[in-house]
Image 1 (spheres, rainbow, N blue to C red):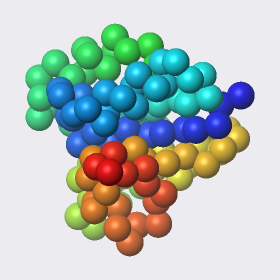
Image 2: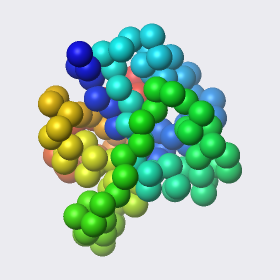
Image 3: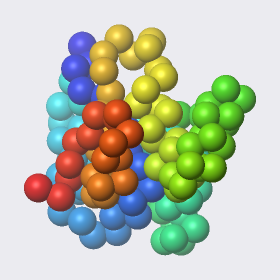
Image 4: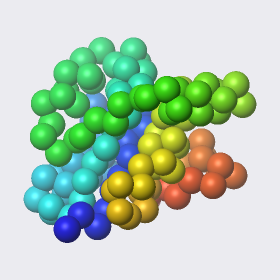
Length: 128
C-alpha cells in the first residue's frame, strides 16, 4: 500500500543534478514501496529548459511517475501563473491538490519551500 505520494516540482527536478536530499529521496522511493514519486510533465519540461538532459534522466528513473496536464489542469495552472506562480510550480501544486484517486494526501517535495508559502499546499521541505 502506498502511503506517501510526493510531487516533484521544477526546482527539485533541476536539483537532480547533485542535491543529496533529492538523491536520497529517489533512493528511498526505490527501496520503499510505500513511497511514490510523481513529476508533472510541465515541471519536467521546465526543468529540462534549465538543465538540459533532466527530461531524459527523469524518464530513466522507474520510481518517478509522470502526471499529465489535462484541460482542467491547464486552466488552473494558467490561473496560478497569472498570479505569479512559475508554471512548473503551479503544475506541482495542481497535482498535489487534484488527484483524489491516489487515496491519500500528496505533498510537494521541494527544494524551494518558500514558493508555496500561503498557497495552502502541503510541502515536504528538502532543504532540511
